[in-house]
Length: 294
Image (tube, rainbow, N blue to C red; front, side, top):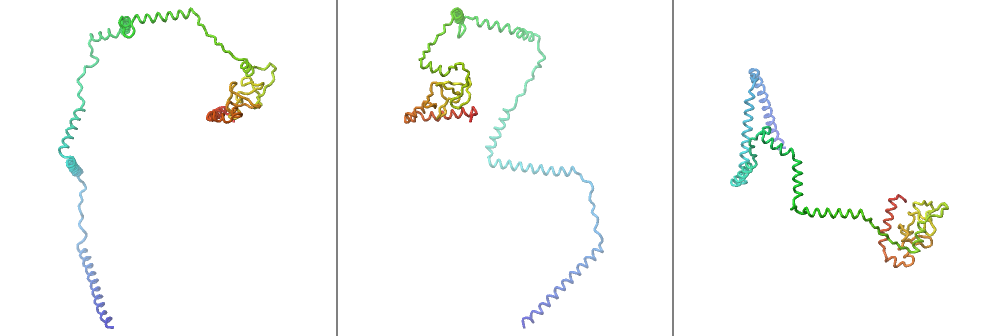
């Protein structure tokens, strides 16, 4: 109870202070407003309507120039500090020497081309007017010299005589052609006759023994009294193209030498050539691809 009684007079004092402050501030505002009303409106400022732009421009440019000069001087000082005075002098001297070397010398005054003496004109005219005749004379004189380097006059005459003699001999004597003696056995002749021999003129249609289609004379191979297409005359194992000299047949089927050997001697055939078979298969596949057959 004693604490509450002590706090109450303090609160009353603070309230009295605040009310007095508000009253003072209101009095100040009222006094200021009355003073302004007594003074009247503020005076009008006089602003110049025209100005000298040249002076403004010169002022700005002078400031810019001063700033640029200050920057250049600062840059030069930085370069001098980094390189040193001696190095800077050497660099400037070398640069000036290079500059003088690269300077193009002034051309001396030339006489105009139109101004030509009559004597010079006549000399040039005589020189170039008959240039072909002079060149031919010079060439003939060089060829007719006795001491020609490489091939002299006598050597040229000798070679010319030799070629003329050879031409005369070739015209007079006929060329003798050698006749080759090709000896064939009776079996080879019979085989060739059976292969490339024509039919007996019966005009019957011949079918391929492998594919069963018609065989025309252009693509016909006749072996063992049977007709074959050239494209069908292949080994039944590796599909290698066969000819009259390298084919073998067994029980109506065609074989190459390797696969014929494989039938009767398989171990020799495997050791004989495995790589040749793969190469043959590649060749056959390439031919089939080029021909477009499936």
